[in-house]
Image 1: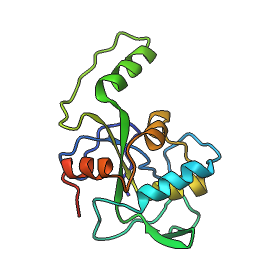
Image 2: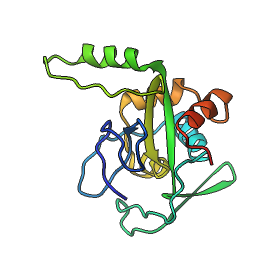
Image 3: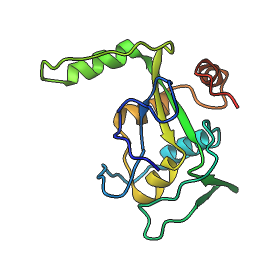
Length: 169
């Protein structure tokens, strides 16, 4: 699997407007946390409604022996590393930008990309569930906030946003 820094612009699957989350690879550090069960529940829910299905699969190269990652939760078994998820922020892009700018102390130059989806979109591999659960990966706070507060599958609002991004299966 390719490595992409958290919150960098998504470029893996084409022209979608999204920010990368959880594209981890051995040799690149990441923040850690002990995952809360509600975070794992939310990630599991998103991984159950995957998008961008790949033709092959990816192993976890953070594990001692890289091999396919199967996980089970509540009697359901998933193969991870074969697709992606999308998580949508509950706040508008403008609100997110204002919050980000208020946290920045430098007077740096900022370039904005125009998006036809009025909220922040995060793109993550389904392997994110394994990374959080087994390797204690801590995604950025804004992603965790979107996971908790944004539209979730199987809501109509969530699938309307997926359709807007042309990610329907």
